[in-house]
Image (cartoon, rainbow, N blue to C red; front, side):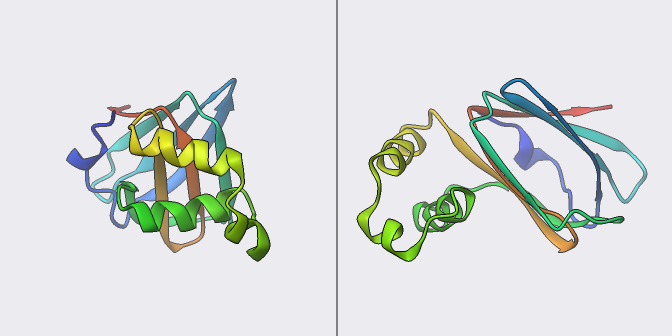
Length: 128
């Protein structure tokens, strides 16, 4: 479950990532100066690449298209080409949970800097 679609993160900056036990809090500064937080609850796995000063965001979204979710899962778990073909049991289980909406994939796509992929149960947006 998520209310993320109600907010525009385009050209915002990812300013902070705070990790906790099975959760993370992402902080964004929007173009208008407002600060928005995103709580990732029931966090199973997260990949954060290319974190830089600035971290300008193209979009923040819940990935719903199954083919795109699959490629992000492969990236998230750093699977080899052979593992992608064999489709390990744990990947099949995760795909099923995604289909059943027990898990979601949150993607922070960058214009510059940080790409973030998170596998979690819920993403909640709140105004800081």
